[in-house]
Amino acid sequence: MTFKEKVADLLEKGLQEKPSLFLVDLTITDSYKIMVTLDGDNGVSLQDCIDISRAIEHNLDREEQDFSLEVASAGVSTPLKLVRQFKKNIGRTLKVKTASETIEATLIEASDDYITLSWKAREPKKIGKGKETVEHQRDIPYADIKEAIVIIIF
Image (cartoon, rainbow, N blue to C red; front, side, top):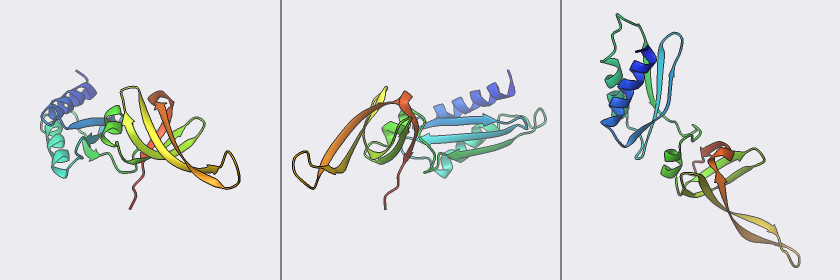
């Protein structure tokens, strides 16, 4: 078993004990720096990071392979990658970039294949002068999303 496989196996076992958490990213550099990024259905606490760190660190032998370990939660500005992250953020405002446009809108649905965004825009009236508020709604397949970030509104 390679070092990366061993780390991935230990991480999986640690996450099985905390079903509300899920892995966003696992990176192991050539210098054996292990970087684990987690997210959770109810957020990620400091204790969650400590528990996952211990699940990995206490089962690896530094005599066999020296390493450094960093376990962190996905930050606010971290782009959404997984369907589970989109589902967790239903009702929040997202900035979604596709190949052709950038949309800032409310995420109202996240299925296994696409997301549904809703937003209002001021557009010229079809008849007469002036503008009117028009409500838009669009389904965007995950494959078309280049980047999606949660917008924090104060």
